[in-house]
Amino acid sequence: MNLEKTLLIIKPDAVKRGLIGTIIETFEKPGLKLMAAKMVRPKGDVIKNHYPGTPLWITEMGNKTLASFKQAGTDVKKIMGTDEPLKLGTFVYDRLVKYWQEGPIVVMIFEGPNAVAVARKLRGHTIPALAEPGTLHAIYSYDSSTLSSTLDRVVKTFVHASGSVEEAEREIKYWFGKDYKFEEYKRETDDLYLV
Amino acid sequence: MEKIINLKNIKERLTTCIWYNYYNNYNRYNGYTNFVLMKKQRALIIIKPDAVERGLSGTITKRFENVGLTIIGLKFQKADSATVVAHYPSTDVWFEKVGQRTLKNCAAKGVDPKVVFKTDDAVSIGKQVKQWLITYFQESPVLIMAVEGYECIEIIRKLSGNTIPVLAAPGTIRGDFSHDSIDLANEAMRPLRNAIHASDAVEDGEKEVALWFKPEELFSYERADEKIMFP
Image (tube, rainbow over all chains, first blue to last red; front, top):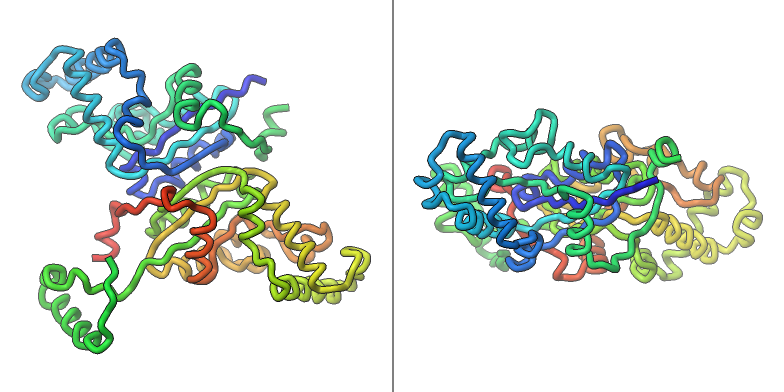
């Protein structure tokens, strides 16, 4: 049985809206097992290092921003002052850190078969306005790149979910330490689907 | 936030406050921002192993958030032994009370306590029951939360329902998510599995939050809907 662990983060806007329970429930319902959780209020550096932060990664983020502006048909240069991916990425990176610092966050680890993919599916597209109906991002937000850029902030992607198994491993180690001791227990679904 | 209120002026200030509220709501804030009669309370809520194992942590947490309480601390972990031991009283008075209650239940069911507990001494029985509670608490990790709000203790008591699930009213957490009874629990020699722990007195709330959380694990923040609920 190949069980995966994935990292999920409930960001400040969702915490302030009283959505902690709703979000935990969404991942618990299919049978994913809550393995760890903590409410924290990290400093800027801690948030910054949650991301790879390499020039390549920043450029990629800049490119994603460019793409979403293009999709929305808005002039990126006019709104952001640049259309250079690396510059744009750095700009977004700073705003991202600012967003995460608006209040406490809840960092969680869930476990299950294909946990990474299952959690990503339930969370939905990163940008709420583009998220599939029924996903958390779609149900609980209308935020979009165009809206956020006119308000000088990032898109409030209020649930972070690891994007791949490797990313999950890195993020779990980052937030809980490499020696975190997970306590095993049985969910009611385990004997139905895991034996 | 809270200021000590001069009791002599309370009536006068309250009258003024109500009048301002009636006349112009904003003036009340401009002139009387320190006029706080009611202090927020803190309570400890623990989603216990039976609820965690059934995947109800989120569903139950939602109930507290829905009424507008603020979760100011949260962690999911196995309860450490020292904390659980300290969570329940260790006085002979408490052991006696728990033991007597158990003896009464045994008598009502016609069960010989000497067969079940190897003793009919209330204090010894109370100690055994505490051990059951500790074992139950540590069966799986638990979701530990500190919540804050006005009259928080009364509200979470209301939401949680009777500690004996079979007696808990529909609409309460225990009424909706469990139906364990004293008889069943005694038959199986285990504590009641009643889904959650919730502080049930104002002093307990503060004490329990301080026992389970370090100060740096608690965060104060304003909920998005707080100003709507309490203008």
